[in-house]
Amino acid sequence: MSICYVELADYLAIAAEITALDTNTLIRVTKVDLAESALHAPAASFGETEFYPDFIDKAAVLVVRLAKNHPLPDGNKRAAWVALRLFIEINDWTWQTTPIVDDAEQAVLAIAAGTWSQDDASAWLRSHLAPASTVLPPDEPGRQ
Image (cartoon, rainbow, N blue to C red):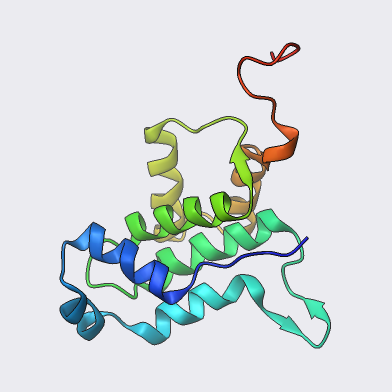
C-alpha cells in the first residue's frame, strides 16, 4: 500500500486558514525548515528500511513533530491536528470511534506539552483509527 504524505503546500494552506495570515506573510514568518522536517518525518527511512512502517506510527510522528517543532508563530497545535486529519483522509483511513472535541484537544495539548511521547500518541490513535475498508457504514447490517 502506497502512503500519501501531507506536503508543504497543504500545510501552508492549513496554516493560512488557521492563522488568517495572507500567503506572503505566512511564508515570511513560518519556519519552513521545521515544517518540512515534521512533514517528512513519517516517510523517514535508511536504505530500504522505513523508520515508521506502520500507518498509525506515521500519523503519530506527523502530529507530534508538527505540534512540537512550532513552525508557525501561532496555531501550531491546531495546524498539527488538521494536518493529521488530512493525512488520515488522503490515505483512506477513518475514525472508528471519533474522539469528542475535549479528548482530541487534550491529546494535542499533551503532545505539545511533552506529557505524551510519540508512543503515547500512537497508542491513542490506534484506539481510534482503522482503515476505511474495515469500518462498516452506520446503516450496514451487523454494525454495532
